[in-house]
Length: 113
Image 1 (cartoon, rainbow, N blue to C red):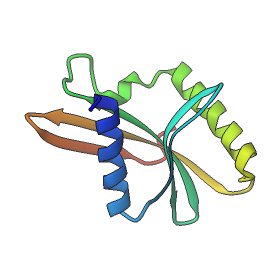
Image 2: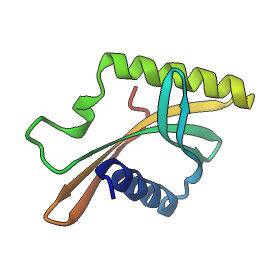
Image 3: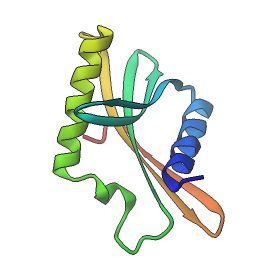
Image 4: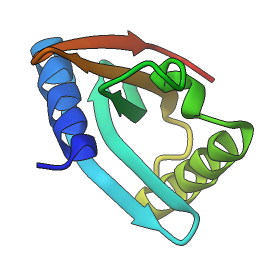
């Protein structure tokens, strides 16, 4: 299993245990991709998942550049238009999945940007 897929599956399981309902995974359009889209309470949550086995290049969240944030926001705008979600409460979260010695550590940052 690819590292990214493993991280997204671990993140989805983590979210479901905390009451999130997964709506879609790996939503793609021309503007880019959203790893996980979930409902939590009254909010639709767009979640970027970053998975790492090593911190050699920094924390997983540090891989989310300004350009990546702009891509994510464009995908969200398209998704909201496509699904008729205008007026809904929206949130962008980031989840870091770190795997070390077969243990999985998850850090969930709500309303990340």
